[in-house]
Each structure stands twice: as structure tokens, then as C-alpha cells.
Image 1: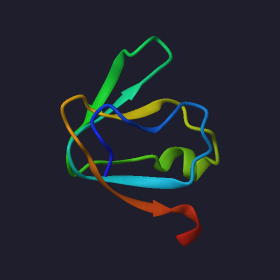
Image 2: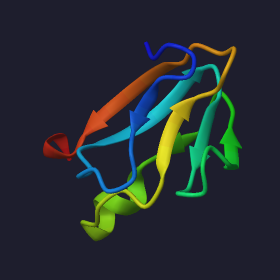
Image 3: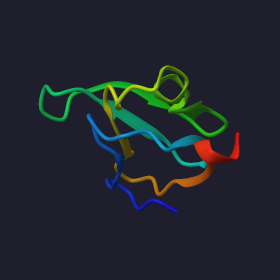
Length: 79
């Protein structure tokens, strides 16, 4: 469970997990302050691109304000 407004990961972090949104919303942010460029709802998944291409995180992911998130994670050592 990720509390509302809490970061799931930040730009530049090493990727270890793919995330599946069980409940809540996740905002994706770039370096421009707290500008949200995408928000994904329940049922979405994210984090796979950096795992596939073995790159650092290209943006930050944060639980949407007013929305705790339940996430299921799949760690890269399990696939």
C-alpha cells in the first residue's frame, strides 16, 4: 500500500519491479516541478519499459493526491 502523495519511485532510480495498480491512481511526473504528464487508473501497469531495456527510471511515479494505492509488484528476479 502506498499512501496518498507518496513516491513509488523517482526519476533516475534503478528499476527492480513492474507495478500493477489494484486500487487508486498513480501520477507520473517529469522534472518540471510537480507537473503531472500522465495519470493511470486501477487495472493499469507500469515500470516494464525500464526493466526490458535495463534503463534507469525515466520519470517519477507517485500515488495521486487523495488516493491511497494498492499495488501488486513483480520483481525482475522472478522473470
